[in-house]
Image (cartoon, rainbow, N blue to C red; front, side, top):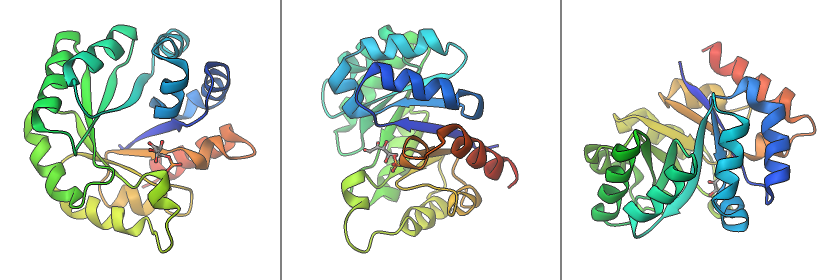
Length: 210
Ligand SMILES: O=C(CO)[C@H](O)[C@H](O)COP(=O)(O)O
């Protein structure tokens, strides 16, 4: 069954904890967004893991260099998964995987901005990562003509374990699951909803019904 990951792109630990408390019953993975970690530091990772020890805490570091060092900081703070950019060199990904193995945790490669996401996903899957994120970032989503269909098509042909992130919502989540994504990432569809708990529950039920 596909997992649901809530992406918390809020800016303070207080707001992040409040959102997580509402949606935790419906999600498997709690993602601390890059702006949140940049604003609050690794203390937000520790605070979230302490509040939700039963959930996977995903630190969206988007590491581009010093993979082992950055991953070690986040794992020491309590992260279960960290991201490294697919555009980074293989040495950076391998370094982060080394830190993950030392902590018994995992690395996710983020393909944001990479011209051929499918090819890079297939390449980095051989480096010991947990899964690869087929990702259209917020800026790409706000570009004229963007459609999540491109990610859905990529997920259907990639042939390695992937998550999909880039505007997942209740109207497209079934197609994302049917394309074979192992993790479904939803940010704005949950934190931007009038009732985030209801939005997360609706996504959870749609995923489980596939
Ligand atoms: O990592 C991110 C941006 O870089 C977001 O958290 C990710 O894109 C999911 O959010 P949304 O569902 O709003 O697209």
